[in-house]
Length: 290
Length: 265
Image (cartoon, rainbow over all chains, first blue to last red; front, side):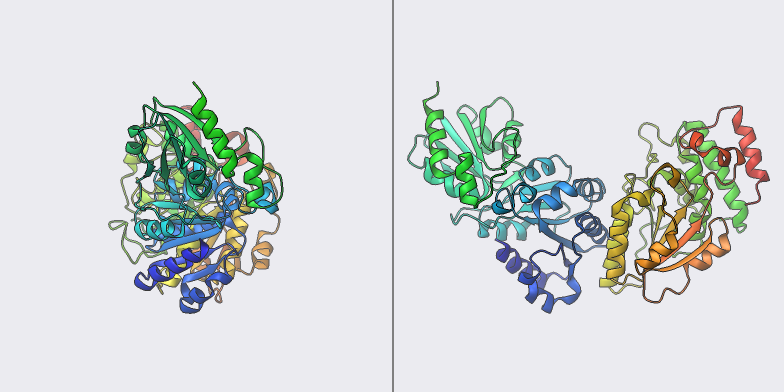
């Protein structure tokens, strides 16, 4: 998905000379062509996430459009106050794009994992929160949102799904509407496991790439069904629950503990039950629940 | 605008005192320590109080946001708004909060309050102006207490690495640091970070004005201003801790006004 970020940013920068990349010593080589082409619009500020966000806000105040990029926990959890005050409270705009979502860096352990970003950033005013699941979704949503008057957060994943779906900002995708009494709701790359897990079950399936603003209409449509939110992060369930009056349950991350097992993304997903088998078992159990 | 800037500084201190007494808010000692710094800035930089969004203006950022009352009092004297409007300082629905909001107060460039933020935003502003090949300058006022924050030094490092010679950092060295981490020899520290550093008496308008425009040899400019917390009031200077966030009583007010009149600042 980072390659898609590069390609889209490259194309946008060709047409819009307000774009500026601020990188935290990550993905720098990937953007070598960009640097060669636009040397005055690419800055590797080093490992100083707080200053990257503050500086991005300052650039925005002067009419430029920053694309701020580094690893998810460092840019969102460490620099939460910079995003809150310098971007959100000052009502400045820009694009924050992170890599290393949830277990993408499984082998690096809990220091490099991040489950909270979607949830905590969704609480900030004037911020849009996007979890593109595929390269196409990133391309479409980045193009549509990069130059608006908001700060937009994009959670990139190194393991996108390859399912071709419509991508329109703020619009959920109903993958299955079979009039079932149970609806699975999910977001982002984990769809690659959710879809095969529930495809032949008697459930509806709704997919989100935009966490904030959440597509309330898509949720309300299935309000009378039992909702199972399958997600490998915090934030989607909370956004859905704000609709109110739902019978909704969360399935995904373990409660009140770090996923501190090393390994691969697939191994950790299996460990916490977010592999195809684990999701299917949970969905079937949910279906059988009275 | 008054031509007698020394007289203006006394009048500004009285405004700060009056508004703090009327509102019950404000960090008077920290405000008194930056009066000359702000007056020197606003009498030096390019700006137009009647056109706060003038596209060719220089940018002034008060990173030590708790000095907002001093900023308002100085901006009022320079014609941005009427000082009477500031009397509602900190009250319900006023635009003049105890920390300034750029979306509410004309001429305020960045909303600050939490320390260690404004300087990073100023670095981004300076970098943006460089990219746009603009001659405009960015000035940011930080405090010595604020410089306990690691983000201050991150920002200085970034400013030096990007050769931001359009950025001037004014370091209000009012020695609040005994309460926290002490920053000894700030000039050496900024110089070690690669900045062009000068050190001046922080209540001397001429020295401040000269330092703000001094040659900086392609580097970020740092002016270490030796200031006194509560400068202008011997009562406050003698007990800055007690006065850190306190407004004068009816009995104290005339005494403090007299001290301002008598102070040879």
